[in-house]
Length: 151
Image (tube, rainbow, N blue to C red):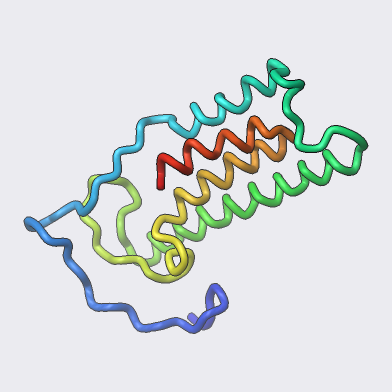
C-alpha cells in the first residue's frame, strides 16, 4: 500500500468494542435534517437581498473579487476531496457510513489521523467555500453556526 497522506502506514490496533450491549451503536449524533442547507440560506438570502450591500469581502477591481472566488473554488475542491477520502477509508475498512449501524472498525488512518470526523469538517469547509464564491461575508459567516453546532 505504501505511503499515504505523507506518513508511513502503521499496524491496525486490535478491534475495540464500545461499552454496552452486544451490537452497541456507539455514540449517537443527532443532526437535524438539512441544517447545512438552512445555514446556506441564512447566508445567501441576505447576500441576494443586498443587505448591507451584500457585505462583500472585496469590493473594488476585478482581481480582488476574482481571487476571493478562486480561493472559494479551491476550498470547495479541497472539502470535496476530504469527504471523498473519508468515504474511501470507510469503504477500505468495510465499516458502515450511515448512522445507527453497528461499527465494525475504528478508523484512525487517512484523514481520521487529524480529525475525528472529517466529513463534518468538509461540510463546514464547503459552506465557507460557497461564501467565498459569492464574495460575501454573509456566506462565509453562515458556516459558523454549523461549525458551532457540530463542535
